[in-house]
Length: 477
Image 1 (tube, rainbow, N blue to C red):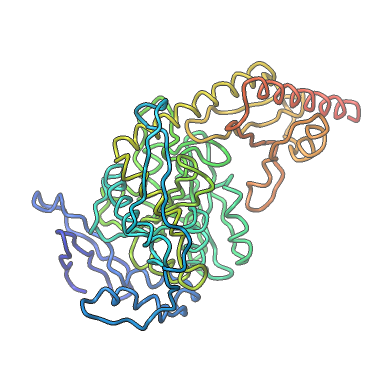
Image 2 (spheres, rainbow, N blue to C red):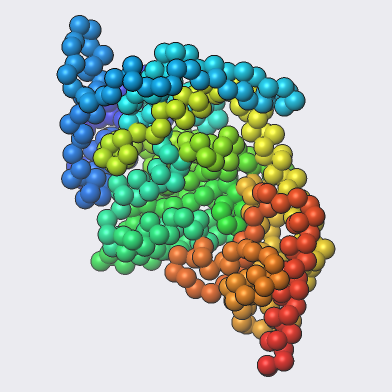
């Protein structure tokens, strides 16, 4: 491809060399400033796993769209006859975002219910997919037709698993922020991946650590194709990546040619004092070309965990590879939960959705303040922590030695699994969030559910466990 070719809606594909690496782009003229350039489809071939390349399209589902051809009589799919379905109507109530004391009644139309009860599109119910497109424009400034698309999943965990399956081969090296969400570690472990830990701190993922890793990478070994990160309210640390860090990571993704897996279930649970920094998905509009971010959103934290609705936004080739996995594994997300979600969100609209999420984030900020207050009362001098700015977790370091000059920070696992549990409090030792399982003095605690009295008692019991461990260490030294 020698020159960039204009696509629909003024979107332009980025020229690439024969090896799929994008060629250098000329400086933007004033007429080009509003044109979004994106990487061509062939660029992503080297990012697909062998499994994704070998997986064939569903011979039935790939033909579903043809059933809408006027005058066509379809003998295609083994769809059950809807007259045998016992469900005849669906109506539910939900709290009003603008007045939580009031419930609003929402009725699913007969047409919507019929669609929900039958097999549907692999990528999601059209009504929900269209609403999500609008949400991504409302929240991130990303418009439909800019070289990316949407697919609905059974929660973001489902989608992340399918993305890893579509992009990572057994034995590959992968970049993961550390500490990292424990739920992705088994995904990479079962593929026998070399998990390269990128350091994090109170400002989120360390771009300096990432740069050092990539610039010292051995020439004889392929560089990682993906970086996994949770940029807001990181689970487990609660940290949010600063704007500067995000821009540096994006620049490194272009320089070293990797895709950012932006797992963002806490985006709408941001409650920091500063303005919420833009997502990677939004920031890549400022890059010379878009297409190096695969973004995962979840409704679990803001609508319902049990409803199991998440969505991925990213390059068409990668999302299509994930859809091919879905067509083989579970066909589609539950039509009923999709239509229930779609009916609610379309009833609300984007402004009401924003009001609801702001209410949810305010709720968790208060929960955080209660927990941090208990930490200050009971663990002052016995633990260290940074104040989380999003999410529902506090990541704190137990000071297991009274000797400030001791180089051995200790291991929280023994304390949390034995002494703390024996005293009636349960938390997670930090080692479960470290890809390579080394010991750590850190602990993750969730403050999402407990009332203030239980929080205070739990942290008080932790204090007793730490003091007991210190006393034992002192007696044996």
